[in-house]
Length: 299
Image (cartoon, rainbow, N blue to C red; front, side):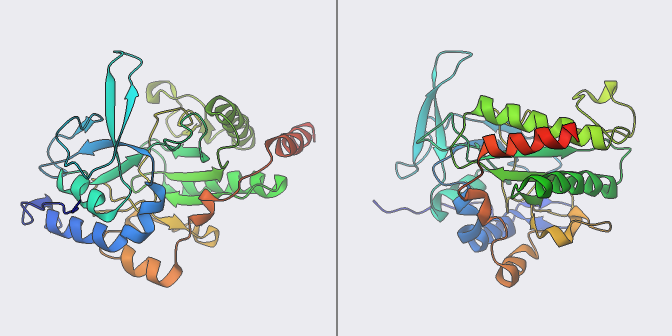
């Protein structure tokens, strides 16, 4: 079956201030496809669509129904809320990636698990979510405390910008543990962070209930069907920013999410390669790490 995404309205301006067009977004995804596709492959995709650009309303679409071409892979899951089957798009190739982007999916939001083992994520995510009172240097400080705890317990983790105001730290699990187990582990790690940075961090999700300068260490992203913009995803934010994998030596004061855009990311990966590939690696032994975390807490 011939796979070919029909690309339309390429001159439509998606980022008015920068005068960046839909065509330029599609060109970005065509160039970055070899790097982003490993983080989309065999994962249900929740589509956030901005068909008229970043200054106009967006909407989420989970069910592609019969609207997608026959060659687009889908995966049907029963929705708990309605009992109806939802046909998620699964983006395994560049043609499907371009098809999604042509629908106005500026960002790509895959599940943390694959269709082969839905309840077993490939990784956990620590989402460092600042308030508008925080600086990005504050966000960096939180990421570095997570890195400090990981180093003390032998965990290998990987950091990327969210493409917006935060940072994401991923820890590979390689489908060894359920979402419940993963979330419990993430909560332990998040609590340790708040113990080390009690003034700066919180586990309070509600902005209105936080102290004005506190950063939310979000461990609740580790649930089935929960999504974040994946590595190398563009974001519908000013500057056409990208969720950019980082070397840990880059995670320091002065780092800015606006440093990474659809204009420079392709050149960056040609220079540095895929800094995030370890996220899909073998993962850790949770019991051994929990024992080390317990000894740290007791110490």
